[in-house]
Length: 222
Ligand SMILES: C[S@@+](CC[C@H](N)C(=O)[O-])C[C@H]1O[C@@H](n2cnc3c(N)ncnc32)[C@H](O)[C@@H]1O
Image (cartoon, rainbow, N blue to C red; front, side):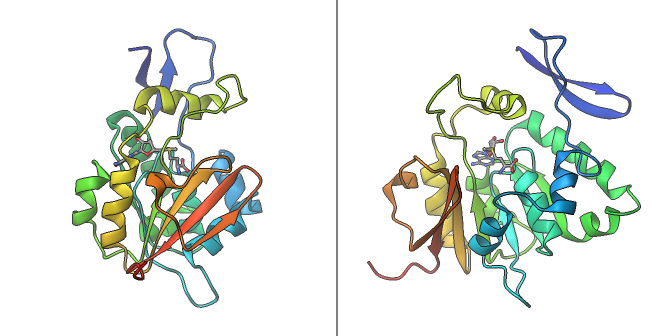
């Protein structure tokens, strides 16, 4: 395997064995890019909060069924939502678990993380039946084939994509999520992509590069 996990300075990092000079991938909710997004917001922050239905006085409970590097889940947790992440890749889940551990030890964000963000490693198609609370919202952000392989996709996401593949069963995950979420399922898609599994959402929120497709549940009769 081209990629492997190594323990360095008490944190797990993902390295590309073919590119020893490359900066390893770690999950850092405390001081990395993700933390910056918490402090200063980020492009798309407003869109994701609208998509999941955050309003004054309403912070829905969310299961992030495709946790990845935990960025979206972390942003939603810092907005005040209780978020449970599920990730099926053992390697990525190990990075997440390690990032969560370090975040819970941090004086500033530790209390928030302990209160709002949890994780299980497993396939959401089964694990969704066993989450710690009944989710109002299920968030699904599967890998999507790159339109242009040479496009400037961030190296960390390219590594994740190499490890996990194309999430070709995402349509099946959407159908399961639609039966479980009590309020809605939100699917993040690249702006150019078709609706997942050809299922039309009731609404979409667009950003420059992405689209959040919103499926209200229970689904109204078509
Ligand atoms: C595009 S990434 C998600 C990025 C994430 N939203 C973030 O902010 O970092 C997709 C991730 O979902 C995971 N995944 C896809 N299908 C899954 C499933 N059925 N159960 C659990 N994890 C899944 C993949 O392993 C991959 O790590």
